[in-house]
Length: 395
Ligand code: NAD
Ligand code: MG
Image 1: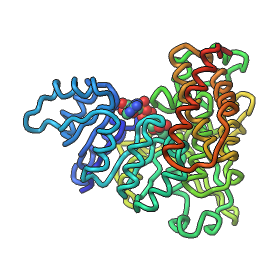
Image 2: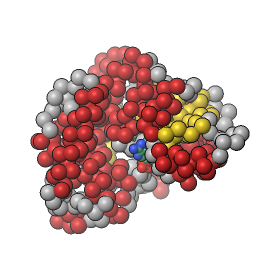
Image 3: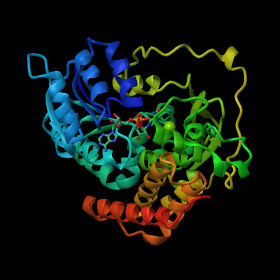
Image 4: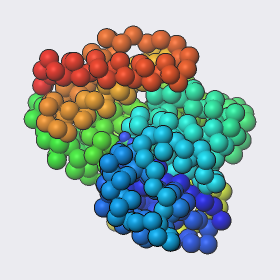
């Protein structure tokens, strides 16, 4: 029986995780649920899953949750704030932690999970982008098992030989990794119309139903840029060994090419419960509630090269990866601020890339020395990005 902590339980990934967990009561027990401020959704999850601990990042929301659930038998212990979040991970008995908070806000709790040597299901790619080398080193020291939930990285993981961690990817005969991308809702839209798109249009993804931040990232393809960084870190790949391929059907979730010419791919319906179930039960396979893939209905699989002019965020992310040091943390912070500004109608869609580019220029990269330094850089980059937006960044 695995005891599970779901960080970001009310979100798109969190909900899918709980759906899979619910199908296997003999395998998994929900020990801790966390969320930001959605008290109603959290109360419903607590009544259904009966966790021992519930954490609300927002202290006011934590008080409201306590009032709603009371303190009778079966009610969870309610904790508050980032300190409560980290303590729930650090002090609890759970052995499986799902990292599904959105943004760099997920870093501290993910770090606590790897330090404790848990099996960590990583959906929160931002924490890896912000503090990759520190997180991987902490996972190695803590003896944590870091399993990718991001569908592309889970696909790559499934297509790599079990020896890749020991021999390195090149020692395993891998030539390169092909990272697939849907191209988002604006893949074929006239470029001159992109500056006028609304948050609702940007969040209407053709294949995946996701949180608003990652939906915008998919529309700008910053998501694929973050995933490029994530792939290089997780699998020890050189940037030159990764290529992005637009595949509008989102059925091939990524591919691994070997030196003998073999190319292995993982296919499936675009449903996050597949990679979640894989990571929850690995190396076993469990039912995920996902419909079987109907190739006759899919009929056609298409592939195309991304257009760098349409998707400048992808190039910015790869450049930040090559620059190294704190550059990916700056990229991520600027993007989080710019996406939030776009979602609240303070910034034009195409200006997201401008804000990221000018923030990267304003906050020079330094070699990474500590988590404190990375967090300080993240804060500086957020201020610089806000200042750019304040000066009027509509495009
Ligand atoms: P979401 O917005 O639907 O959910 C985010 C969750 O995090 C919610 O439970 C929210 O309460 C919590 N949260 C938000 N801000 C917080 C804060 N400051 N402190 C603590 N908790 C906070 O997001 P999502 O789409 O589920 O994405 C979650 C993560 O998974 C992201 O990093 C995303 O890139 C990654 N991911 C998502 C998908 C997907 O299909 N949705 C696929 C791959 C990767
Ligand atoms: Mg993905």
